[in-house]
Each structure stands twice: as structure tokens, then as C-alpha cells.
Length: 184
Image (cartoon, rainbow, N blue to C red):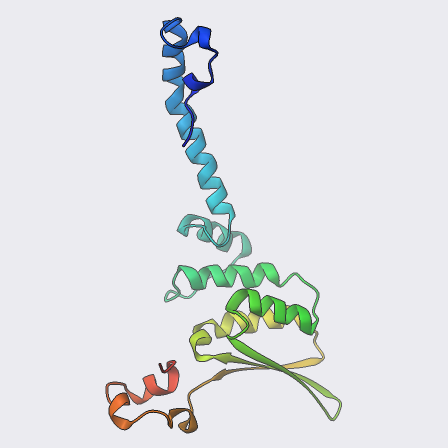
């Protein structure tokens, strides 16, 4: 609970003893409330996880990001984070930290292959993160060294993933939904 200006006055100026001072304090209080609200908005817009559409639009303008029209606020926030986090020098550990921070450690799998002199960094996204494919690819393209081949894929549902389900339990879904959505 915020205190008012009158509560900060010494006892000799409060409780009706200095009416003029109390009236001045009451007149200043709305301006102080506006300043406090403005400070709160600055804090919210400065925090990537809490910012509103205003803050997201400002970051997109600063970073020269044009989001697809179908992105929601969280996906737009995610894209901003990927650009900001891509400033870190590349190591497998850093890539894992960045991906853990962005989509969680259960949202992907990362494997590095060394085959016939080639280095391949394979990242497989879980279906829930399929809409973030382009943003993640752009992030990897910015931070991973050029001699690595980046293979980014989505872990779609396969026939073997459907074995626990009956035809009846999947009958309300289309083939595309069965392939592209996480099954419960």
C-alpha cells in the first residue's frame, strides 16, 4: 500500500494544525500517483517476460523484427529473446542454455555428429514448438560457427507414436492434426 504525502509530514503539519500545507500535499498527491504509475509501466515494459504489446512493438522496431501476422504475443516475445540472446559466443553449452531458457529442456533434443570431417549440429524440436522453427533457425544461424552444418527438424508424430491410441480415440481428429499436434 503506498503512502500519501500527508503521511510523510511531521506531526506539527498534520492533523489540521497547518491546513495550507495539507491542501498543498493533497493537490500534489495525484501528480505523485501519476509518476508512480509511470515508473511501474517503465518497469513492466523493460522486463521481457512482463511487457505489453507496447514494449514488444518497441523492441521489434529497435531490433528491426517483422513478426508474421499469425504470431501471438508470446511468440513475438520469443523472437525478441532469440535476437537478444544471439549475442553470446557459440558453444554447445551456450546453445543448450539458450534453448533451455527459450523453450525448456524438454522442448528439443540436441545432438552433435562428427562424420567424415563434417560437423553436424542436429536439433529436433518437439511438436509444441513447431511455430517457433523460423525464429530458432535464425538464432542458430547467427550464433553457430560457419563450419557447422545445422539440421533443424520437428519431431512429428509417427505411426509408432500412435500405437497406444485406438482408431476411436483419434476419430475426432484429422490426419494433419494427428501428425502435427501433441497427442494427450
